[in-house]
Length: 446
Image (tube, rainbow, N blue to C red; front, side):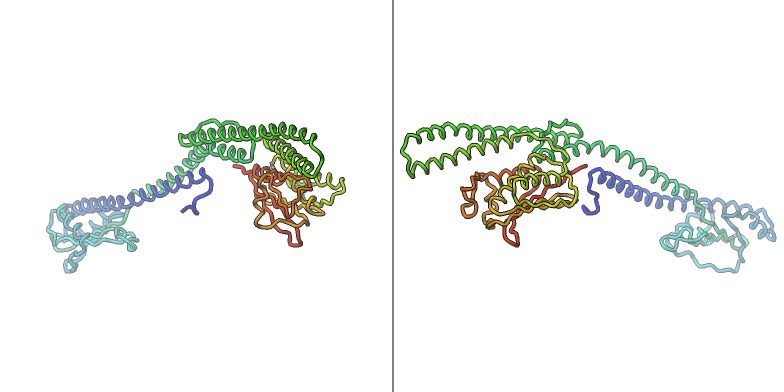
């Protein structure tokens, strides 16, 4: 059943409404056809009884020699009479339904049951046999022994009702489609706005509280989203302030230790302590920079991603770095360009620090953009590829402290990519080296 349903809620409401309308009309049509059959039977039987009774009474005043002409003159288009010889033998009616007609006709005509025969024609037959002009054939033995045969053709005064029902169904479906489409789109508009706000909030954008409108269930969902947005924003702000305060307060003891170190004699121990203090100072400064950039609010906009990457690579090439990028076509993406540039710069810096060159590729897709940065360095083992994204993690086997890194480059890159709703992962380069692959989804609409 879910595979048959359309994707959008509005389309599902329209589809289910039309399905319910069609099913109800089919049920009503079947009930109507059943009642119509019963109605036709009663009308035809009553018409036959009245007309045959009137004809038999009229024949009492007609001479026997002229009765054949009289019954022909009394015939109509739908009801035809004929006199049959007295020696004609007709079988007794045995069908249960026809037997009921015999009893009722005999009662209405005021004659014995043995003098009445009934044959149900194809016009009143049930099932596949119901197809023909004759509805009912009645034979009544007259006083002179001859048989009066009455053949009733099928007439259906309800035939136009069926056509009117189909017309009514089409008009009702059209009106209902218009009403349901307009109403469902109006009802689901707050849901579409909620989905868009959740998408933007997941990308790290600042989202204003949504107006709580619509049905009660949708209003409660919007209210829950507004509370969640407020709590998450408060949590992130408090975490950022806490880490920034710790990094800032570390400056004072580091400075005090450095001053005390100046009064100690220069030897291997003091030089080692001085290097450790330098590392701590760089980590504190990097933490402050990371927190400031993470807390900075940048609006998203549509940018030419291929031009952004090409301009960044041109800056590196101007500094005599081997950074290769060949833009194949124009690739546009709704993103925060400064954040993307910062993440890409960190990845290129890593590639150049641990390899001789950086190869950048950009692929455009219908639902996502794939950006990769490859180097020819020693690479990273599969066991450490997830751990290197943690802040301040540096792998001694391939990421030396002599490079001056603090272990925040990949952490910043992952934060930026995830803030855009994307994903980042590491893979081996077949010719040797490491490749960082970034997948950025396109903004969802509707």
